Image (cartoon, rainbow, N blue to C red; front, side):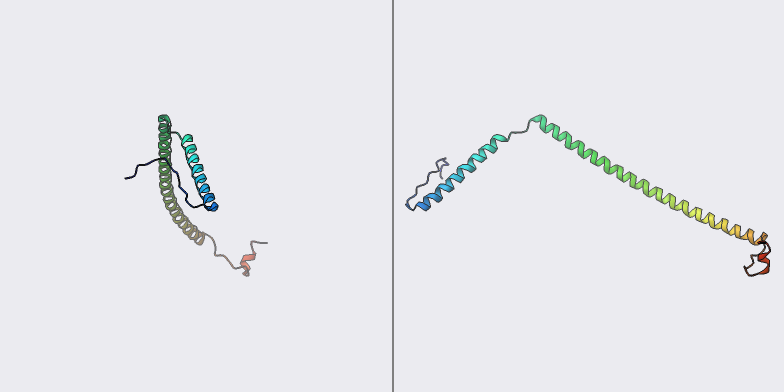
Length: 129
């Protein structure tokens, strides 16, 4: 097994300047990435217990309120359906009562009023003079 070391040396045997430049760029990028990671670690901090507790309470309350709203919507939907059914039944009763009353009115008109004359009949003109 190899022991892990922080020694990142590189032996370059080739004397070609472009290879040296490429290796310098790679190493420079590695150093910048390492520095960036270190900066990120310094900016990050663990949560305090109080922060975790507050977040848990806030999320729990949000969930509870969401459930409460959903329950209210379900109740309103049930009330709406019930009321719509009641109104449809009331409308049906009113239509039936209206039809019954109209039949009674027609029956009374036929019984007590003279038959309606057409506009061209001589009797229709008597009341208009």
